Amino acid sequence: MADDQQTMRRECGTMEVHERLLRLVPGYAEARSRSENYALRAAVLPQMSREGCTTIPVVVHVVHRTPAQNISDAQVQSQIAVLNDDFRMRNADLSTAPAPFAAVAGDARLSFELATTDPDGNPTDGIVRVRTEKSEFSTVADDVKFSAEGGSDAWPADRYLNIWSRRGSSALAGRRSWATRSSRAGPPRRTAW
Image (cartoon, rainbow, N blue to C red; front, side, top):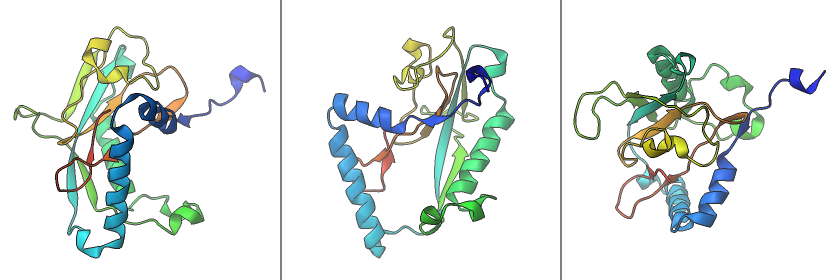
């Protein structure tokens, strides 16, 4: 089969971004260490466990140049439903999880919902649509996270989970940032780096 006929291999860019942040962002390594230590303590000390299910407000930034890239509200909502199924251990393919993962699978007791209020307290549907002139965004430079770079600025990461939908320059399926812990008491929070 010719190279151009082969199926594109999709990859995760998490580690590449993590390594870049370790090199360039002051305090990133310390924040990661605090977060890992908090998670370890929560795993071993039952009194650190929380009751019930924690709801996380989500904002989805749909950064598009063409109408095809401007995904529908229904597409956004279906992916939030998939996220909820995965984190609540309700996904249909759970029985096919590889043995090393099946042994540690569990209900994270997290629920994701599109935000209903924006950072200023105004009503929102949790979807920000930004028309851009950029034909693609870097897979690791985070330019999609800045309006000055043709993207969409993050909402406060201590109050919202920010997700971006955009056209990239490679077969990158996606990436994520690790949660970090602030200096104040409470559960870990996600920080936009």
